[in-house]
Length: 94
Image: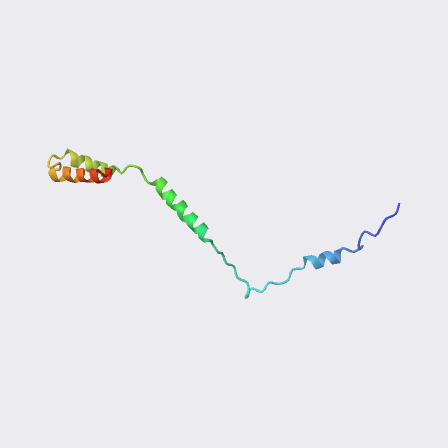
């Protein structure tokens, strides 16, 4: 059985050369971050979705105000009913 040459006997010198670190010149290096337009749009969309999820579906203050107006007999008159009728006609395109 023969043993071929495996490598140098003193691997320590080679290891030291590989792990030697060169000093970094701090005057020429700088860190920077670039954010793509897609990422900015996605972040804005997520923020809007979060705001919408936290917003209540029903505005209790508006409902209370409208109930008070409907219960007031002076509120319902020809002007109000005409305006509501006109808006309904426009909405349904009649």
